Image (cartoon, rainbow, N blue to C red; front, side, top):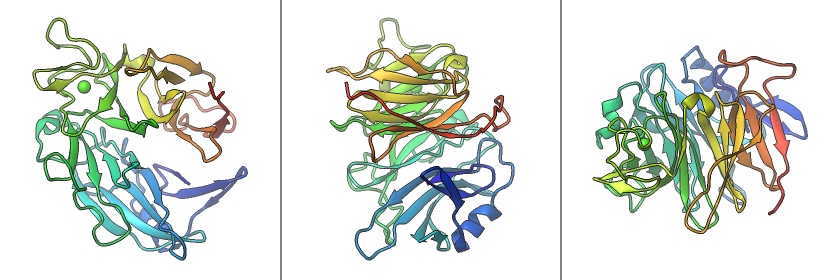
Length: 317
Ligand SMILES: [Ca+2]
């Protein structure tokens, strides 16, 4: 399934054929679809509830006054009317975050942006500039703080500017990509309760002398990978395989490969550079990478066939 940010549609793509989902849920999502800057219909995650039950589809959508996580049942190509799972995430024209992923622990991780109010990222009580971790089992408990969250709230990590991608490695490490202000884009290793520094620091900028990648100094945790300047990357969606972390780059128009090492990650390697702006990358059930381009979003140069979902096979080693 693929979301369309501005039209508010969810597409089912199978064997190269594209069909838009229908039903009350599709109508409700489309009703909020107007030009919302970087907002709109953003992340999507699907929960398989087992035999006899329809899958639950979670989406992140920018509405009139907030960003919200909504849930629908999917029967065939029909979506039921949305149920509000988590509301009141600050919205703005820019910095809405919006990635959703179900973690290996079965909980739903939600990335938010600072909603162009940087200080909110340093306010643990605000949902802006955070990674959130919530219950998502398809019941009325959805949206409550997941057990073990560091503050007893839905907040999992804080001090983020605009988290665009999250992914887990096989050994359980959680990585997250983040757009910088203009100097430094980041890939962070996410630890529960850690403060990733925005807007006090950006990458290693303004860090105490001697601070290295991945260090935690004076309560702030620094990224494990930097891209300088941000025009070289703008890291959006990410995916992880045993080969490493794959990072979709918008302004950098590159799919990066960040190799995994015993102690962390290596330096990013440009892997694919001929697709234009790359919005997202996931690992498919077949083990291949599926990459979404973003050349028709008003910031790119559309080419024939854009935008596209591209399948890329990667070597096992
Ligand atoms: Ca940071």
